Amino acid sequence: MDKPRVFVSMWGLLLMCVAFSKTELTLTTTRITPTTHPAVHKPCNTQTSCETCLANVSCLWCQTNSSCTDYPVSYVIPPASVCKLSQARWGVCWVNFEALIIAMAVVCGILLLAITVCCCCCCCKRRRSSSFDSDDEQFARRREEIRQRSDERKAERKVKHDEIRKKYGLIPDSDHPYSKFENE
Image (tube, rainbow, N blue to C red; front, side, top):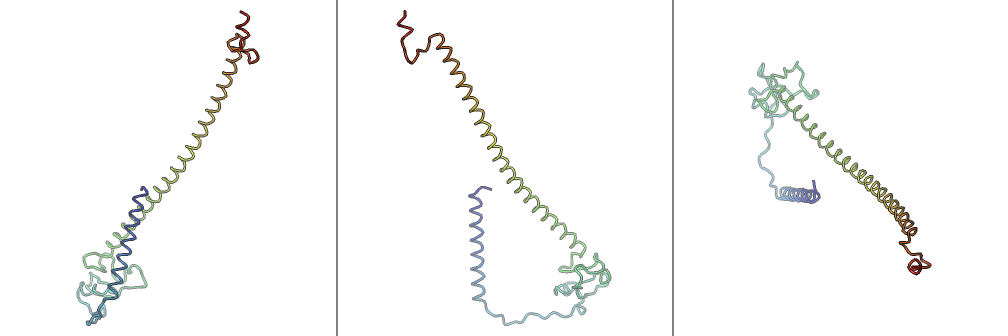
């Protein structure tokens, strides 16, 4: 993500947080106390239908014997002695506990996979950019070495050519610049 997008998304998130806190503040300051009292839930074992049983979150409906029991809070998943998972209902009547557990496991697995992929992508991108930096440094160092060697060879060629020119009199001596021409 480029910097402007990150900046805009950060500002958007900040504005949403401020707006939410403002609405929450106005709701809490202007809230009128209700005159009706919340309904008191009946004990779970007195419920006779799935809908009325599951209206109370502390109840568990068992489809096999059509009974409503207290959710066994000492266990995360109700044991088979209370009700089979395929027949247990909690939260809504149309989803059994088995399907609920499988769906939650799939969603958690997908979330973990997405987080892992994102972390790997970020790490690989960071590693790739750092390796590009080191590659760029190596390339620049190598280019500089090649340039230095080229300059050295150029200087050697110039010295050789100057010696040849001097030998054949193409370059005048610095003491007598026109000595070759005077002899003629």
